[in-house]
Image 1: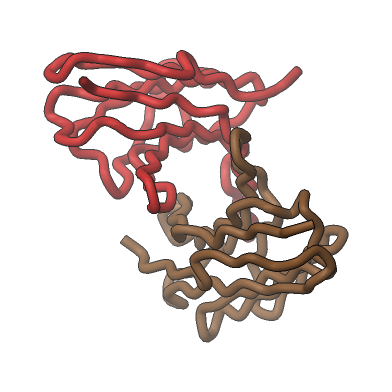
Image 2: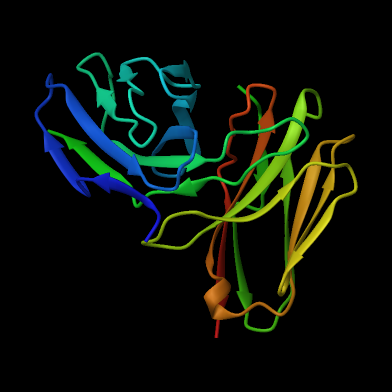
Length: 116
Length: 111
């Protein structure tokens, strides 16, 4: 089965601790994305990567970091600098956008992070 | 950050009713417009990706239109069914080739 996996589903951390959320895909997609959802709000883009070893800040990158060392993996680290880390985090992937076209994104099941 | 607005925020309809939602977005630097359906306890799923002004797409009872010049898209559901209950998200794609999502329209269809 091809798809995107995120682990864990629920994560609890103490304030001041860094935490890394996993995202793995076996769809052979070049592009991967991280979003955050807060109650009553839409998905907000944290970071995205169009190709291995390259990534760009999204709209709310402060307090987060990512790496893209492998095509299949795009882990997100929530650092202690993130002021309000409690949220639902979604990872997505897509074929790399080509000139004149656009590709749908496929989403993982999400990780709900609670910082105590 | 693009300003993406969806209306209404929520909608309750009876089974069999037809309904439509609106997504408005900046018309400058436009590349594509995506619609997603997000059911409770599931992941968002793509409905349509539209790129050309005047595009119309259809999937079963759901269809969408796109006006890139004035910056809006409509999503229509004909004869709503309880299984259509979900949050419908639109997301324009700009030059950076990443999506900016609206806050969604939450649809509930009563049997």
